[in-house]
Structures are given as structure tokens and as C-alpha cells.
Length: 391
Image (cartoon, rainbow, N blue to C red; front, side, top):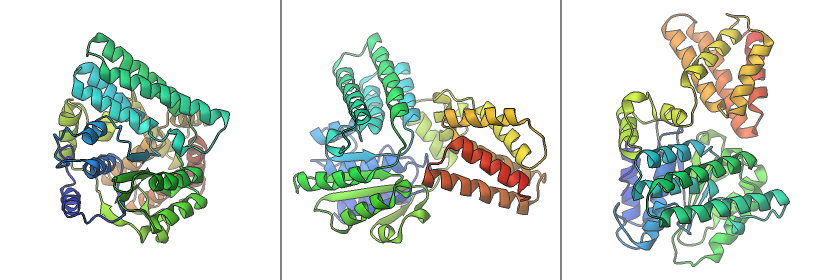
């Protein structure tokens, strides 16, 4: 059990005891930062619950085989994250080391994206919704073909084509927020499936959903049917309503130590950890992001907002537009915070002033997450607030 989870031993042990003793409640909250393994733990929990045998890592029962490729029909993933970095990393692994296990791993990453595009979860009959459902269906058909074919040079070509179609689907979709109609559809789904079947619904980013969606979710959490487990994943649990927090068992999943991150890079993705300084950097590199350029832009941004350097407005707009277009908002904020931390250590800025700026950065990040603001506009407002607000 949980063989693919490196670090988070305390959480894993607690879950194992609950799973063995059939003492899991109907709802869990996995709270912590990105890249800490929250989703991996959630998906492994779903696999073990659906297993028709012992739940062991090498189990080959029908349900576990489906889980290996992200195809468990009784596990729903509704994710707000950009999963393209994981898909690209899966493609890179398959291209470097073409073998059946890596085909399955790639398929699992792709189904993180297309999992929420199921007709039974859609009430929307608009032309755009039909286009998204059709695109997801066609991607899934190609995944079936990928799994069935003998591995040869065409395997990587097909996987690359699938990745390209995933890029288009991700770009065409609206925000990662879960609409109230889908929350209600989930409720319908869990009541229409066999009662004896273990069902798991993994929801990420519910801090950003509308009040109507939260109320619909709360109603389902209050009286879930037997054998149903909700797993809520959140970076900002403090923004969740107390009515929801009171109905979940909380698990704190902290950032992994570097040795544990090394194990993930080396064993899961079979890459050299010495080429990276974190799992976050690993995914950024696999996504084609220039980490040095991002760092330079964060340093430029910080220098400007602290009035240390005058930057032409056109240059600032170019940087912010790029961050927005390439969906690097979170990474950019994180880099800016790291720049400030290093300046405090080097005695270049008073700790009190750095703390005030960091609070603004965290506030801007939370607002962007919660209200789904335009990243470029959010960063520009943040810049002007700090630079001209005399913080």
C-alpha cells in the first residue's frame, strides 16, 4: 500500500490503519502545498478502497489494473490544477524508457485531465460543452489504442499526439472552478451506482467554487450514501466554510524534504535528481519553462516594487503578460517570495518590510486563487499597491 508515496509517513500510516480497520469517515481533507503528494495519496486511497483483493501494491485485480491507468469507473477526479506539467513529465518518461509500466503511467496522467469530462457529470448542453466532451472522448479512445498496441517507435509518436490534444483541451476549457451543476451531478451519480461498490470523489480547489456549489457539496456531505468517500484537496483550508471543515477528517501533508523529493524524481520519473533543486523545478523544466528567466523576472519585479529600480512600464507589462499567458502566476509569486527571503538573509531589506511585502504577495495569491482574477492585472495591481502604497 502507498508504495509510490515517498515521505508523508505519518499520514500514510494513519490512512493504512483506517483502511485496514474500515474506519474511514465519509470525507477527508488533505491540506498542504503543491508537490507534497496530496493527489497521489488520494488516488492511492481510492485504488485501495476499490481493490477486490488485498490492496497490495502489485495487485492485479481488475479494479487495480483500471486504477493504474486512471480508468477506475468508481473514482471521480475534479481537479482545479493545471495537469499539463504531469502529462508532459509522463510523456518524457515514456519517450526515454518505452515500456508498459510507463505507458500506464502516462495514461494515468492524461486521465487526470479528461476525468471530469464525462457526459454523466455534465448538465451543460451548450456548443462549447459538446466540443469539450467530444475532445475528451477522442483522447480517451487514443489512450485505449495506446495501451493495446505493441510498444515500438509509433508508441511515443501517438503519446506525443495525445499530449498535443490535451494541450488544446486544457487551453479551451474555462477556469478550474467546479460549477454547481457538476456538484449536483456528482450527488446523482453516487446515488445511482451500486450501494455495495466503494466510490471515491476527489475534489481539488473547492476554496474557489461559488457559494451555491459549496452549499450543494455540503448537502451531499451531510448524508452521503454508504461506501462513498469524498477527498477534498486544498492549499488554503482557512478559506473553506466551517460547515464543510466540520464534516471532514483533516490530514496535514507538509512539503517534502529534499531527500524525499529526490526519491520521487529518481524512482517515479527515473530521472537524475542532481539536475533539479525540487520537484517543482523538475515539472517546470519538463514543461519547457526557463527557470533562470523566471528567476530574473521575479528579481526585476521585486526591485521595481521596492523602488530600487525604475523599470519602463512597457517592460513591466511584457513580463506580466508573459507570466499570465504561460500560466506561471503561482511560480512567479513563489519566486518573488524566495527573492525577498534571500534579501532578508543578506541584510538587504529589513525583516519588517519584507514581512509586509510578503503579506501582500500571499494576499494577492489567495485572491487570485479564490476569485480567479486575471493574473497580469493581479500582478500589476500588486506592484502598484506596494510600490506607491509606501509599504
